Amino acid sequence: MKRRGWVVPTGAALGFAMLYAPIVIMMIYSFNASKLASVWGGWSTRWYGELMANDQVLEAAWISVKVGVMAATVGTVFGTMIAYALSRFGRFRGRLLLAGMATAPIVMPEVVTGLSLLLLFIIMETNFGWPAGRGVDTIVIAHATFCMAFVAVIVQARMADMDESVEEAAMDLGARQPWVFFDVTLPALAPALVSGWLLSFTLSFDDLVIASFVSGPGASTLPMVVFSKVRLGVSPEINALATLMIVAVAAILAATMLRGGLTPAARRAPRDEG
Image (tube, rainbow, N blue to C red):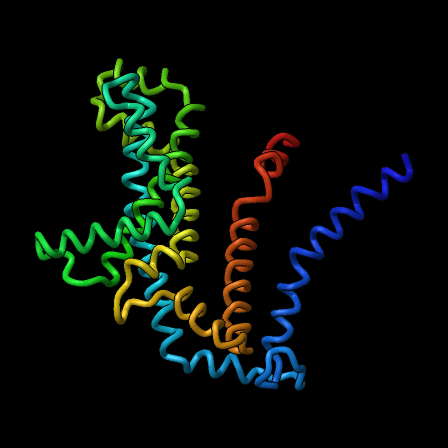
């Protein structure tokens, strides 16, 4: 039993070390004064200043944020509609086809998705004149296609746990179907919608493969710019960029945990004691 007691903590420690040690090392080397990423030359914040003065990186970051917000919003709207149809409309003709098409982007290789969307945009431009070239619009459409699949799965799982009798009671009291959805169903889906939106934004912001297929001149996202720079060698400037992103995510996570509490049980504890 004693030997077993050492195994789990040791394995957990090694796992966390393998996961977070490279991140800590990268953050330390973002303050490296040397131009060589692998040679320590003393402490310096030089690369953070150069990063803030790099218009290419700043523009790519703004494009990624803009694309992420729009793609997550569109994906959340359509994903919620798909989940509602699959959960509340019972068995209808084409239900299995809709369910399969809704979840296909999750398991489909990104190369296949990117290539198929590229061909679609080329055909649409040739026959209809839109989209006129590839840019932010095409990236948003491409990202929304796989974002809504993840949202549909999350929202559908939430709706499976909801009590339909509440909606039925609202309709028995005279509420029409649209108002039941907005006044009863939608508030109950709020946690799932927020989770789906945040996941969609993260997936869109992080995407490289699909964006590389459907982007055009002047519409490079942050992962595309970082990848092009890393191909020439990792620089302390890239380390500084990654460090800022990690700090931003950690700050948002900490603020969320402090605002909402660590767990539902922790939030209920004061009321239970009272």
